Length: 596
Image (cartoon, rainbow, N blue to C red; front, side, top):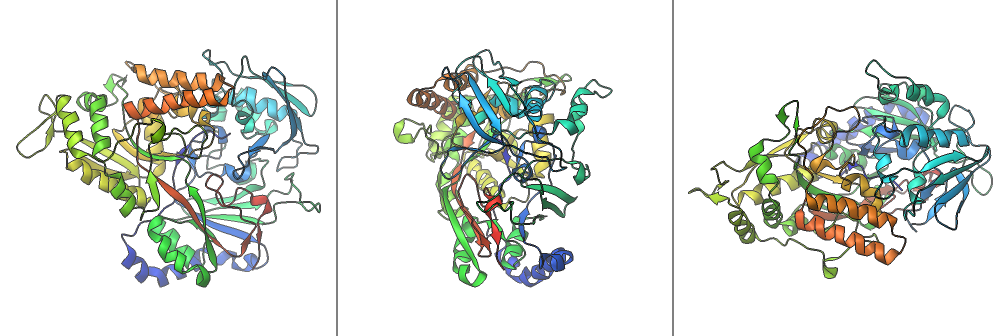
């Protein structure tokens, strides 16, 4: 089970269509130049090329909060989830046994496992990874949020049984127990000294280990690929890990594709043009380009795969944190009063015309999103089952605002009870044209109820830093990754969680916040997630998660927008793709082949 992360989804918009067409020839040349140094070698070895919008923030999995990230290629855990069937499957562990009382799981590692530097991968690495990193309170990792058990928030215990067996124990029944142990295993022989040794401030050196300036050969991994090189604003290159454990039925070592290249592109427009010119092997397909690319499938030697509704969420959220840092409020107290008024948030939800957003930005290839839990999850609560929804109704929005003490001036501008103009800054990640288009419509829709929205697209890394570190923001438009197991989102809904962005508690090593308040509904959601994780009966779990969804929709810490279809265009030369909304194109990268 993977913890939720900030999603930097790759999509594109229609706005610069004419410019794109005029620039196509130039981009073909540009794409050829950017990869020219690889052409001779590429003709001799199989490789796969994709585009990403931003540079990585870290090569240290425990400290990562973003998606996409390099860890999908370079790290593995004891188990994995098959994104087609949803079943738990072996990975580094060849088997496991669950005790009759459901409190213990015993894993048996595969024989002969090795790290990318040839060193043995053993039970000691598993124990180190959990006890010294994920369960270590000195290390600010979101992984710990999904491992906490019960009201006590106790953590599992992990102990070595012998050279191949390791035992995990929880203090009480924990429904997502097995799935929670799919976190990547990290190398003790490389990282232990950085965990044990401290810097001048008394913090583990681990917190500054494996940053993006680390030489790739020092990043020791266990996944199908290892880092070969990284050039800022240009590309990340992965080389096949010669010590990867997986082999096919004939005994041939996997993966088959020798090299993976991630081109770092300046915008989604560039990504589209590079794909159309042959520079990329696959891209996510935005709805506005679906018709164009669909017509070009045969000519362009690619196929558009449809995985159904996308996992994850897209939303706007207001900063509800009423605390102060170094004597200064995190949010302007005037605006904080607006944001913390539930009628204000509900009015904003009623004022956003999400169906028009689907029709225009998503070209009809999407549906209204109303829940933090993915629609494919068995724990999703539908509107028909009682999930509150906010159909577009600007009149209702105005009624809510006036009932909460807001008023309108002669120019129909919204003022609060003290006469302050209602105006806030909405940030989103620059370069993601779909999100920029969504933000632009939100600005227009809210202007119709008298609210002025100032748009500020910023770099994805800067945005994540604001949300997780400085807490200097008013409203943001972003998304979280998703999955079938709601407890994967416990780092979002726990009042102490690392992604509890709308009312963030400072994480380990960050400056203290005074005056932070937790609302009753906020605490209730947090407690319900704990109760649901304790409940082993699936139907009762669904009832508990249903209540969380009703509360999130009533109090709207996040205002959900649109659930698009998961679409990807994949070159015919890439064989073995089993596309899914959860796993994407390369979830089975070890099985893929390239046929030119």
